[in-house]
Image (cartoon, rainbow, N blue to C red; front, side, top):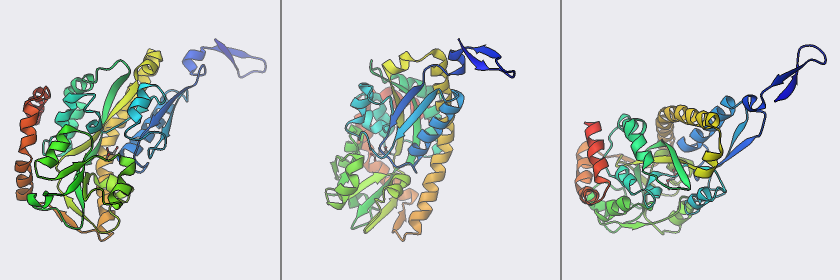
Length: 328
Ligand code: LMR
């Protein structure tokens, strides 16, 4: 119990410090690797704003963007050690930890944002989130960026055999590695914060990413070609340190969960908007852009089929069946 000044001089009104949120200040350090002006960067800011409003500034979310604190290779260990409390890596970078999430990387599994939203916000999302079964970290939700496109040096990727022999950056996911191997490309791993330099140093000839990531990190600079293929999705798992989470009161946990749910809803619309605005900006930059036709997409999908065979031999198979049923 504390006291605050009433309307009259010397009048002190007792209040519950817990309820007013004036007791201890809680800070959540949230680290991520992309620019602020991206679907994930903006979702993190929206989340911080909602948490501050609803906790009456008791809970503050401090965001470190652009891999300033930790990069792809170090952020998972940092959140496990509670050096930061939250991260939002793409699920592709979490598949060693959560093999079931491999299914989400399957090429041409999703065709529209509505389909992605159905899987990421419905009942199946809870099952998928529960797959992260780790004593140190907990998955609270999924955020979306958008569909991945191909960006290449020297030549436009249109036909399946344009991939042959190309060194393509792949995030550390077996499905993505196999996706590129199935079209005879050579997958090369590179951390997001080193990707710009690695591309310039010719460590790779091509990469897959969303329009907003390509635009915000200027990956399109210097003679690149963009192919709009929508062949896979880039989305994020929002992860919190488990012991930090358990140290919060039920009321504070509730505030965080509600703020996250509202952010997620907002993020789906905002991500779509950002990707289409950034595409307009790329178009006005004279970047050669090729839209794959449906026929061409079908050819790519057929060439990527070995990846589905691979999933059928893993525990993620049960999710593939469930997702296909939900999307029918
Ligand atoms: C990438 O590594 O290309 C993405 O996962 C980066 C991100 O977080 O959007």
